[in-house]
Length: 257
Image (cartoon, rainbow, N blue to C red):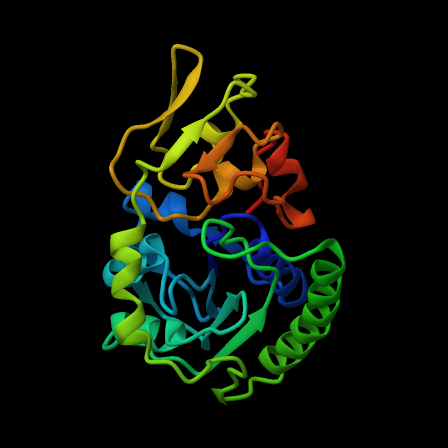
């Protein structure tokens, strides 16, 4: 089983390719956390984790899964962290949260287009295409390593900053108050449907965030077909991005896991 968390499709696209190549089925991390599905029997099959890196660490939902997950009869255990530039301590953090229940045989990271447009200028179309082309080769390398049952830490993009100092900023940042909806909203409800935490509700024909905090996956903002969602002033006028693997998701069709 491959536990997948993805906001705008990068991690989903990687997990889908690994699943197709290895025959290991995917599990939706968000659904597992929402419905408290924390117990599994792997029956000797690989147990993988594919997720994006937030503030050099784990998205909140991945952290929650790891803190509660119990897997019986696991085969090989590995993880793949997708990141904008550096993966920091995401794999290390996951290993710590799973310690005593699952031990990693291999860890990988891979650079994908950054969707943190509330903090950084988004990549240009040319930069995006170049990053995705390089990522394709990296995914093939990771698949080959998984199939060859290679052991080790194969992360190439950790960087040299201390993730334990940076990650606490995530808890401070992941608030929903800055989300605003403009008059461009057409009440399509895609944001409501795709939210991993299911905290976006459409009231009086406008989306409302029902909780003070979310995972900050940016799916609602990036996949809005009218770019009607902003996160404060920082995202106004900035280009949006979602991985082509999320096309069906972007038009309201549920993903296949």
